[in-house]
Image (cartoon, rainbow, N blue to C red; front, top):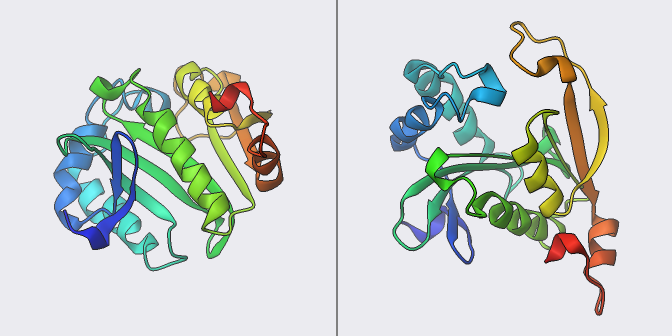
Length: 199
C-alpha cells in the first residue's frame, strides 16, 4: 500500500483512496443481499454499473476539497478489505458540512469497525479539515446504523420521507437524519468533560 493513498490509519483500520483495481471488491460488497437490504431491498449493484458509474464517481471526488470523499477500509492487521466510509461535502465543493456514511462486509458487522472509523473521521473533520457540521442519514428501521451514528456522537435531528422509484421493506417509516456540529463536539471534548458517546 502506498503512503500517498493512505488517508487515515487508526487502531484497527486503514482508510485509503480507491483505485480502478478495486471494482471487484466493490462488486462483491454490493452483491450481498444483507448488505444492500436497507439500500435497495437486497438487490445487488451490477458489476458494470460499479465499473462505469459508481467507482468513477468515487475517484473523481479526490480532485475536489482535499480529505473528502470515499475511503476503502482495510483491516490494519492483515489488509483485508472490509468495505468503505464516505466523508464528503453535502454541497459540492463546500467542506463545511459533510455527510458521513459507511458500508461494510457482513463478516465485519458487530465488531465496532463502523464506530471506530466514524469517530476517527469526525475527529479529523473537526480538527484538520475545516468541517463545521457532520450529518448522516439512514432508513428509520435500520437500528444498527442508527446505533453507529449515536456512538460516533451524532444526535437525532428529524424523520423525513422521500419518493423512491421502488419502495423497499421499511421505507414507509421514512429516513432519519443525525448530526453533530463542531461546537457540540468541542464542548464534549473539552478537558474534564466526557459523554456516553465518547466511551
